[in-house]
Length: 330
Image 1: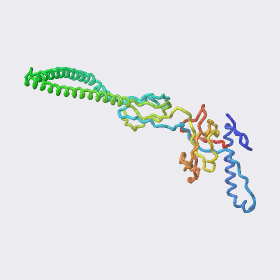
Image 2 (image 1 turned 90 degrees about the horizontal axis):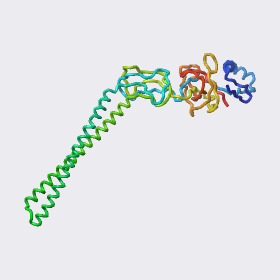
Image 3 (image 1 turned 60 degrees about the vertical axis):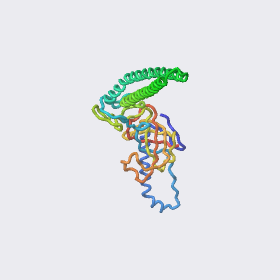
């Protein structure tokens, strides 16, 4: 374990932190007693000046958490849970399936839409063939009409023949326009079916509940047979990465804590050093004590600064552990 030196202060070793804690407690007790007799000493020695005690370390209570916090994985879909594919304390990879949700209805809708594609394509082909035939007939009728028109002008054809050819041409033009509309309608219907297929595929894929990043499952909150909705929490998850100790430093020493300062994580039961670490985050503002509001050891009106300590790789306390945190001030 690396050691650190401060000016005019004895060498601090994390392995002897327990002893330092005891000494600190004694010092606090002596200070308390001194404060109770302060008035008498002040009266006796009005001109005396008290020498301030240099503080080169600060202690706080911390909680061990993943660096990104404990995340709640929600289902993001609705349906009956068929299978739970994960266990507590299981390491998972990004994209790994967590639960299977019933997709029978959506799968049936997808299959039905897919089955209509071939039928609709055949309908388009038939309508297109009819349109092609009508176009040929219309071109022939146009040629007949134009020929009769020239013959009438040359007085080689009757006006009745010209009128009949014109009526046939107009009728075929109407049929061609109707056939084009039929082809367009069938084509649009094909596009709608393909859109339905994409939609049902999306719905089915959303029924697959997966992880978005690697990490560890801490707690599973669902069982087979449960019905889940979009917001149902199915598991508590810790993303892969370092652990941090989240602590709060009293406002008296808050401005002396800096990122990069060394720290030791200490067991509250044995006083042993559990891990080493480095200050990785310091809040830019003071706030009311919040991490351990169940403790009555601090005055309620005290302000604190939130501090995170990134733990070094190796043996670390369990997530959720409450520990003491000793920060070496520089």
